Length: 422
Image (cartoon, rainbow, N blue to C red; front, side, top):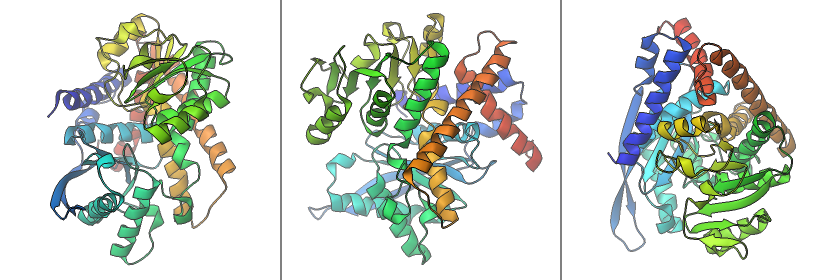
């Protein structure tokens, strides 16, 4: 177990335990949520282009089914661990509950750098993952979607392989698919769009207005790039962007659409023609901006660097980017952190909308999906604010994350009680 992986799992379990205590729930609720219901570990052999066989390690974690089928993405990443998967699956349980979705939490992963695979090798790996795990997947059992390192093409291969095994077309078994296979056109940018919606709501609530405010984005993959794109459309000025190549800072504003083209063509924001550049992959976290969005990976804001944050508002686009120690430091400085389970839920909400359409053999347009997504994100935000207000009446130190977790735990507790689990 790597230190980063164990840190993420400890953070998630600490967050859940704190929510149980603040919400006055029975200890048995934590006991049930502290361990996943099922963990499957598989090996996936792939014949590489040079003729050799390479074996990749894969996982699927099914955390909690109290509210319905498991739901969560599949991550392709060279450093992912089983502990990561368990932590992320638990986060999905909380996130799905908070969003009011009829899902439990799940997560999948393959330890691989997808950038090092050819298209054929990536397809064989994607199909191999489904062949190894199809028996625990399904539209009413466990519905995977995309995550870091996977995209609509990977989902297309996976749903095709699953359909072949089942002997029928099964589009509802996976989400994040291309539109031509039953995907929702909003899903590809839904997480970033949802982050932008929450950023605007949080700016209005905590900073008085969203007009003319500046934002720095750390991480410029699918989440960060679309977060920046939609935030700029909503009137925010993007002044800093970081990715694996470094950081670009321009107080006059970064042209987001141009930045997205540069990253597509060259692989990094560092090649953006303008602003000040550095090789610091976390530079955006410390930029002079009103809002900072850690949209990369977990454990980016820590006790060691939290005091370097200049922003007044942190909006988490990534899963678990802020450690508990860092959040305490930020809270002491008056910085509000909008937690991942609230801010980045746009992806799973859009996946839910896609799944609903697939199950009903129905479809609606992009504008309607985006409108439904925006309304659900706003409803989640308002509900969490309400819980936060009530929570602080008896625990003044309670954070917005605490409120989100307590709200999610209440729904889980009620479902478990009705089922007879508690």
